Length: 535
Image (tube, rainbow, N blue to C red; front, side, top):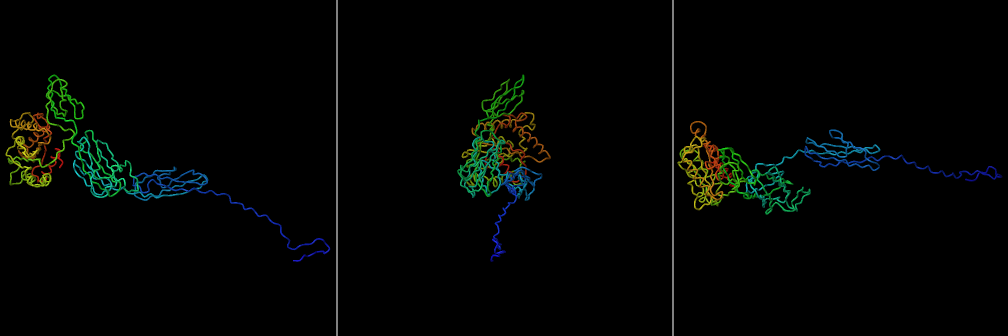
């Protein structure tokens, strides 16, 4: 645009659209600063616990521009304000727990976690498995625990071996074995293959390095140095499902100081008799008896003495306080069954105990024993002898019972009932015996004394009771008292007058009459096991 001059003579002029002055930029004012809220997560010691378990929840909180000043948990029975809390639950359910954390500016961060409470799984526990020395157990796949009662081990002293053997699958997976006696548990720890692939670490004690696995010749050895209860418990606990193993129980012979039964009798007329003796564990014992009073004691040989006044100590058989030596059936073992054929046990040809016991030796017992005689029926028939005798003098039977020349051990099994009372005084409380009883008992004890090794000649007396009513039952009650006395040493039947001091003889009381062959077979097996036979 051209200049517009007001007065051409004037030195001044006005210029259209002059250049505007520069206006400074307005500075940008920042917003007031804002707080960054805290963040939080929850960790749990277990997200799938069982009902009744206690787990720990922990709030893991951070605040980038400050500090955490408080915690508040929800889902609990009462407000909790600590970083970590312990919770439990009594019902099977998923349950939500939450936590609110507050920072120093008052802002809050939230987090929650779901815990799935589960029903406690049923553990597979079997306490009915009895394992005798020499038994082999083949344990199939299982979950949880298995319990084995090691029968007879409690009476042993020495090394008890659990010998693992080949068999089945999954034998490399870890299993923890515990053995318990005298209220004490020895934990062997987990045994399995050291190379077994597993995500979770094996709990301590971990013995997978050695022994390497549950296979032969791996053994667990438990050294028992003292007398223990009659039952020892072995518990196997699987670390993972579907585990299996196979083992044989090897027991020691009784390793203990030899002890004998002694019948102590006080004979002091001016006071009591004080006896002293040493028991199987080497502990000094004291017994005080009045004049004429008797007591059976188990003592180390040549340690019994009458410390005060006078008394007698009559020696009997070995006492085996820590368990009788283990007995085995072999081709040289002979069994003789003797029965009274006077009629009270039932005649041949009609139903009665005689018929059923004979049937038992021909059937159930043969099925149990044939393996010990090389499955040779002829050899079994030669070694297992069944006889009858029209005579109630059962001690006389045993005395005159000779072992076959080709056998080395004889087990005499006598079945008697109240008819046997006819040869001894029926009034068993007056300390008198008939001549036949006295003679037979003396001969019988002499025969026992002639055997130097326990197990050469063992005796089982089966006492068959009678039903109530009538004279036979009265005779049975008298005979029952008689058996009680000679087997316990009561009422004058102590020492050489009875059999309570003889470990080679056992009395099986209250055997039921008129039972089937299977019943008498079980009674026989139970009696043999009580003598130390592992059948």
